[in-house]
Length: 264
Image 1 (cartoon, rainbow, N blue to C red):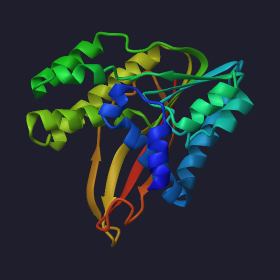
Image 2: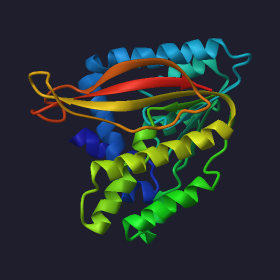
Image 3: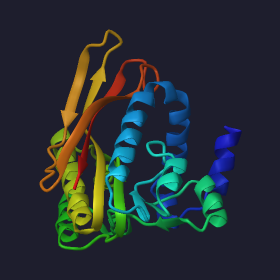
Image 4: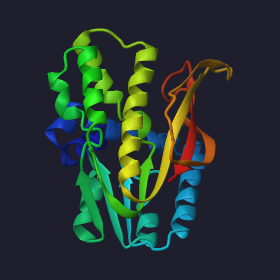
């Protein structure tokens, strides 16, 4: 608890990121990784192998941008530094460690940005209809544009809508149905992919496409997915990721993700 409190007070953040829980989420993710590192190893190896394979095939390796960089669990910083001259990390919040490293290393740049551009609009939303109207407006905008030899979107798609949806549920004072959540998550993911396609450079995307909850007897309790269109991208691999072994998230179930990787 002392270490988490230390991280909470030292990590640079923005008012919006703090208000909507990204700082708490970031610290929780780091400590889940530390607890589940052994279970995550096959997933992390797949991510790193695909990154290295994609980097080797590039005509030049001057610059790389990682969208949703978080703690760089999937692609450690040393692999980025070894393979590219300039590294840019983009997220709504960066860990304290990355801020410290960026001050020492001119090759590392941090961009603090809400890639969904939804957070600053949430205070003005008061109904599910307002939320869908915001989504339609976001579809018409350019939310981000980057240029690099390689742009990586790492396990970000299913995360973009989570905190906005939680905020909406508090405002309308009811839980969204699974169908409503799937529709919103799909819309956020496809908006992200539309913007990513317009960026200049090779793209590499890791995305969890399916979630499975299993009982202590390994029986399937629940299985869900969101039907995102990856038109314009080429699927290169898929695998399963044991995100939360039994007793990590609950004594009643474990959580497994089906992850798919794409290039464009």
